[in-house]
View 1 (cartoon, one colour):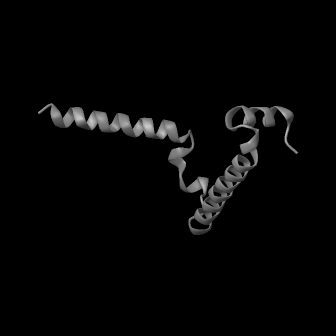
View 2: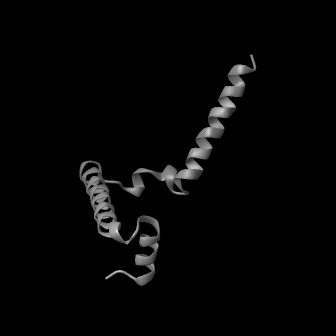
Length: 79
């Protein structure tokens, strides 16, 4: 069962005659994504304890790396 609002939103974007096709494609994409995630987890299971650098979130870790790179770049180019 789909909510009336969801049906209206889908129809507004793709039209009522394309609803089934849209839902089929969306379901197929999501199944592929979930299968890929499972396959990755089967090969290399993620353990938070193995990645303490990400404890505060990936965005903060990436920001820290970028700041380190900028600092290194300024040091190298100041010569």
